[in-house]
Amino acid sequence: MQKVLVVKAKPKIEQLLIDGDILIYKNTSAAENEIHWGDDFWTLHADFQEVKTMIDSELGNLQRDSGVHELSICFSSPNNFRKKIFKEYKQHRSGIRKPLCFNNAKDYVREKYDAFESNWLEADDLLGVKNTMFPDHCCIVSVDKDLLTVPGYHWDFEKKEMFYVDEGLADYNFYMQTLTGDATDGYKGCPGVGPVKAKRILDKAIEEDIDMWDAVVDTFIKAKLSRDEAILQARMAYILRKDQYDGLDNYPKLWYPYDEIVETA
Image (cartoon, rainbow, N blue to C red; front, top):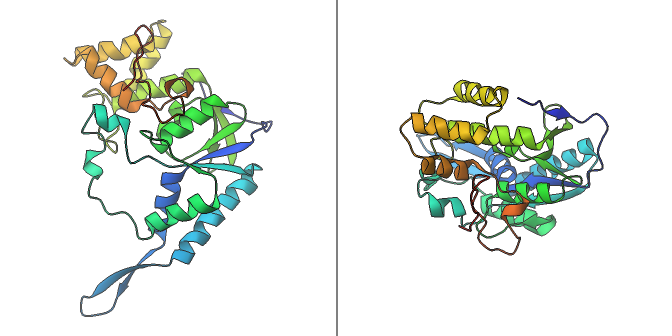
């Protein structure tokens, strides 16, 4: 497996691509406060001014630490192409309460910063498309491990530095996600395959010069599942790159194996 490249010489990054969904959810959640008034009576409160201050502070710290001042904040569309082809995708999240001030905070960010949303895409997909469209000028800012399936520059929150994921490592991470699935997103991957087994399968494929996708399909077939099921799981795991979306609010092109014809959702 290829290693993540830590960027020693700072690249000429001009724009930080920020996961707006996480930005809003994290800060509105942190601003919620429970108050016990006695006699088993509780209320939940949030100070919207505190929310705005936390958002501005987080973005300001990112600009300072990275040395990059242009921000592009990406939000998910209410429409989701993955739900169109797999109804169970994130189905378990329906009905979950959003934090207080969530919608107000989103409106605040839209008014104050450059914020983007494209029909049918999640925030992750917008980040993936933009990062691969302008690979030498953008850097993804997100704690979501799914974004490590996207090649290009990324931001490390703990070390406060950029690192680079090349295309080979991004593809490796994508196939890993296809095999293991993602319980938080509601798709299962290949039954009986966890991170350790998936790593062993992919590393063996690389060592024996076997295409990683072929190794993925073989694993699904051994689990008595079809190649089509492997493709479906891959489509759930795949974060869009520049070739899968034209930026005109059209349906994205679904992920296909290298040897098949590409079509839209």
